[in-house]
Image 1 (cartoon, rainbow, N blue to C red):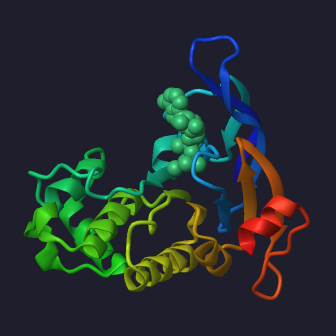
Image 2 (cartoon, rainbow, N blue to C red; image 1 turned 120 degrees about the horizontal axis):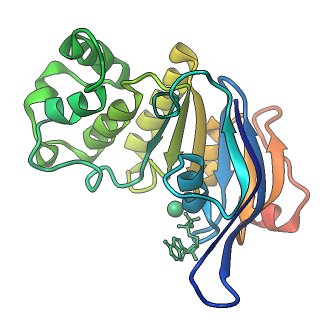
Length: 232
Ligand SMILES: Nc1ncnc2c1ncn2[C@@H]1O[C@H](COP(=O)(O)OP(=O)(O)O)[C@@H](O)[C@H]1O
Ligand SMILES: [Mg+2]
């Protein structure tokens, strides 16, 4: 469904430019949960922005096999739920915004979807500051899935949450995958979460994908010494 080929990106005007991504190739199939792991600074968020067409690549292509509008089919959730939401808006206003082009009853659609992320109607009247960290990340998630995308890109969405809330969000992602058939590209430096959640994983180091592994019997297996070190 998603096909990334020979993607490269550099930043800066100087010569030589700093290569941030080098010859990235990856795929996500329909309904698949794919992980991307790598240390901080390895280029994961840059890759996410390129996949979402928030920035353009220097070389290579990102293609998405759908006849629908790209922006309705492919959505992203970022790590920092607080920064991603207008603090003066109520949850209802925050959730209505992505549905501005929707025909029909937007409020009814929001109420129906609330349950999918474990929120209740009482949350709709609150502002972000009146929510817990876990609730904020649920609102953030819900906002991205209201248009029922085929692919959801999650960039470190559980990284600043405590273990219990992390677990709840991970279960939520699994449920969205199962019940809505949503494919997930799950970017994280938390290898434990990735091994638990993902069917397949790519390991990034210094702007390159150095290895890919398919989960068998609940575990990934690696050959590259860097991946082995990471997962140890
Ligand atoms: N807009 C930018 N301009 C210049 N350098 C950037 C920019 N965005 C990211 N970088 C650099 O690209 C590298 C990869 O960053 P990032 O994609 O955020 O990695 P990760 O998400 O894996 O931590 C880092 O060295 C970072 O400093
Ligand atoms: Mg990042």
